[in-house]
Length: 372
Image (cartoon, rainbow, N blue to C red; front, side):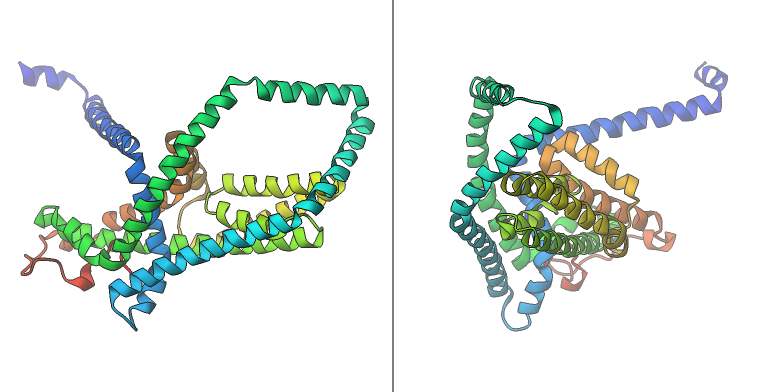
């Protein structure tokens, strides 16, 4: 009876139903994994950040390993990274503190220019302008959302401090014992799949390393170009703008908009609308240079993803994980694309079970994962 019923169902319908229920199961599994990762975000996010930093600092760690043991090299790499970050923060803080007085006087002149420009352009009187400013202040002071955001900011700051310690601790051990950690991960899989897992790890780690190196180079060029523009236009805090541009360049698209907006806003407040428009032209020019020259030649060779794929990955990442999702979307997409291409192009002869290990761990030169 069952065979008679199945024979009445057309083959395309049966194939579509088979794909449909399998797709539903995969979708449920993906949603469940994303939900668990979201619940454990205070641990998973620092782990992801530590993995990116390990891929970025691996070259430095390997160079230091030529002269000292891995543990000492990992410690020096971590300490040097903290010193560089502290130096940048100190440089920005000293520049802001030393230039705050000049900024205050420039801001007063700039606000006057803005008020005059608004009054002549949109025919707004001084009383109307004052009324609009007072209404904005009142709405900000009485906003319940602002108070809730302030409360959330306190909780987020606590989580950020905890995440920082987890990131530093994880980064040290990823640099120090990365090959051993990856060998342990590989042994969790069935023997028949270990060769594929290990080779996929090599591909994924190479793609992630190339992405971080290319991102640093692109971010440095963006920061240099916008800093030079700010110096020429005498915009306040040019070095602080450069550091902000460099850091936010690691967040695709969104970071460029935020850092460029800060530079233009400072130019507007301190120098007036004309300088702000010139600063906007500089920011747009640098970003166009990045999009049409740096991205195709540097990022395009390192991370082989279509621009449409990058946009969709960023959109999905922002919806699922907010700012952190936006930061991790492109490297995850790049790794997934590289590993998928590798597995689909694996010859059938490599489908044989991996040889049985004779020791407690895989061979060190076969370890892929986070390593220094």
